[in-house]
Amino acid sequence: MIDHLSSYTTDYDASRAFYLAALAPLGYGLQREMQTEWDPDWPTRRCAAFGPDGKPVLWIIEVRQAVSPRHVAFHAPGRAAVDAFHAAALANGGSDHGAPGPRPIYHEHYYGAFAIDPDGNNVEAVCHAPA
Image 1 (cartoon, helix red, strand yellow):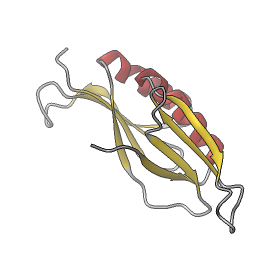
Image 2 (cartoon, one colour):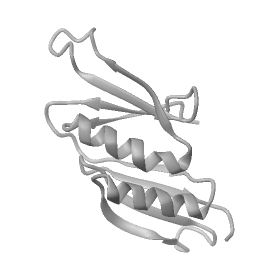
Image 3 (cartoon, one colour):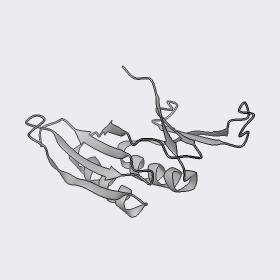
Image 4 (cartoon, helix red, strand yellow):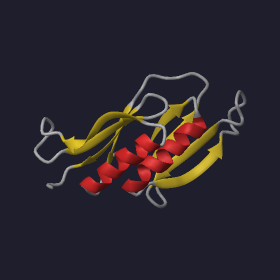
């Protein structure tokens, strides 16, 4: 089981706003925000962690140069949460990478939606429960 993971952003403010809005329907909020005072080359580098209450799961970390895109999928408690994730992502700087809907290629009850975040990462919300 994954405890937490990091992604990197060249536009911290845009990514912070994107994740704050897009992950809210999934029960994730801003858990922590800080600067990397330990980095002598960039002591004001910003980081933010998102997750359910008390559990920072996804960290976004400011970088000066873009890194290769990633894919991360978040569990959604229901299909309505998948729909709300997608709408919030698109309304907050994301672009469509797959509208909410069934994905039977994965399995019978797979229902997901995909958005590209401000740094080109493929972010997904998925529900595995029957309709």
